[in-house]
Image (tube, rainbow, N blue to C red; front, side, top):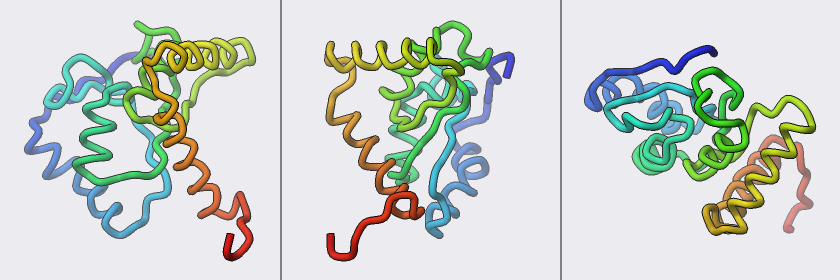
Length: 154
């Protein structure tokens, strides 16, 4: 919670050991949502914490491991992300491939995140299609979990 852990393992070890449980669970279809964590996985991205890294979320998780479901961040207020405001981290998290953001703790912080995301979409930093993809994933999960009921044949 207070600092950015550094994971110095090789890509070979990460793939053989650390990612093995994910690979197994994904193969079995036992994953409804994944939380990205704030750690620096230097073998893949020595600059960005995994939760804000397109390499870790979009490439490794979504492409290499094949996960296409909902990804939620860990708290964007944590010390590991102290070099960014929550609003900046939110934009980076969406760009990386996260769908849900965890962190703003009051209406003021929520509004700053919404404003930053809206500005990022308006400027083209985040595409509307990228937002739509997250909405589709979230709605699909809600339907799957029975939170939203869809009439048969609809």
